[in-house]
Length: 184
Image 1: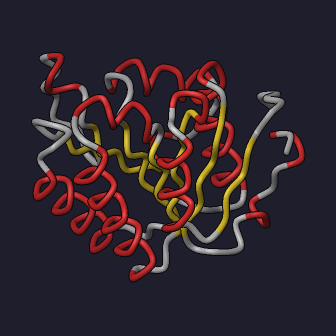
Image 2 (image 1 turned 90 degrees about the vertical axis):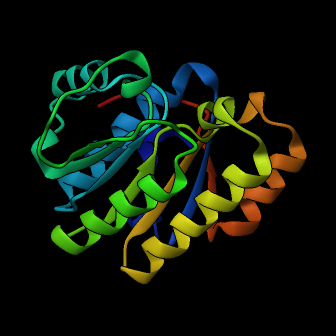
């Protein structure tokens, strides 16, 4: 599928796996966030790849309204970023599952959340083993369903073994493979 052909109506289930090439995953995450917002949706950007200031600058550059997003960031505190920001939760460690779960729960209770976007499952795997991270992501996807939100997992397909992709697909309602990225 080409990204320019993607529309929010393609998200007709609850949990989605988006497979991309390493060079395109940030463009896909940003483009999908923009398209979701353009359709009036608000969500949580679960950042597992870059520090918050870099992410925010990139989203601002692409005219993505960061005021309409909540952020869960598992990277910045490890890089000594310790800001206090509304609608942003900095987690001490990517494997602090209870803290991440609590941040999700708090956002669901305070905000109107339509989607959750995990910007890179593949990057998240750098912080731990597949089994606990996979189980945790599955639990967060189930929580999103419970609150009526779509859960979008972006993964860099070439960096994952086929069995990992199969396991991810087993928890998802639908999957996409983007092969031509054109950021709008």
